[in-house]
Length: 410
Image (cartoon, rainbow, N blue to C red):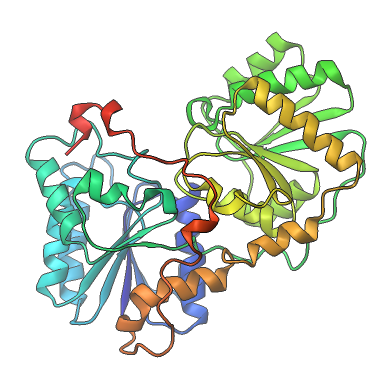
């Protein structure tokens, strides 16, 4: 049995999308599993999975909850369920203050535990308030974890350097659903429509710089539009920036969207997309979905993003330094490619099936967890690194421990 464990369930964002795709695929494969979640808010996505017949142990949010009572009750329940040979897969970094307790419970039952960091230690070090004994306990828990799963090659060395973990770090792409059976047709042009999908966040997503670059592009040519899809606390600030730059008539804020119902409409409305983040963990869902749909993207060369694009200029353009000037020049270069008919959606989509599709992800994941959980080593062959690191081309994610606050370091 595989227990998918998440002690801070939130129906928004990449973690919930990951759980959704993983659970649906495990159900389709008839692999025994159960979700174990502690909800931080009402969860329609969890309701959807339950309606599909997926077993879920849920701790709903309670008013005025303190001292992590629900999470500790969840651990006690898990202890009554585990049997030798079972796996607990933490789909995200567990609560640091109870992680060691979780590891000890799993091992006391003869089971094993794996953990997935959806972002790398470089960008998700231990939180500043996790100090003293909690930091030491968390380090011990990570060292005792049976399998660490990462979403990018750039993070492999970091688990040893940051946490002292000496086991193998398995690089496995995210489980993601296949939304498109063929490349999504491009809209007519002009105007040329540039899109962004994701959280409207200035600090991480670098969208203030994206607006500066687009304002420069708008001075050069009038046949371009920028479409931002997603919600976030920085929307008002970004809207004010468009007014200050005089581009409010060609920048469109579409707000939060339903990922499952509106994805095709969003992608079909734009010619290419941007992802100019200052940091990321791995090739995120938005990028995987864009490649699956055959959409070209200008993406920052940070974290695990080069895993997807490095060495594949027909698929997207990596930005080594996504400031306003480099992003502006990339806009100009990409538009020239489109006008010369040099963008081939079929080549872009082919990259998705070269190691990033659901079957590739699941085969690699099962080689680490599923073979023992199902009592057999025959179904999936070992392939925890789903493509060789030598193909990545750049090393953009080196750990900068010297710059970390000492409270964040172990």
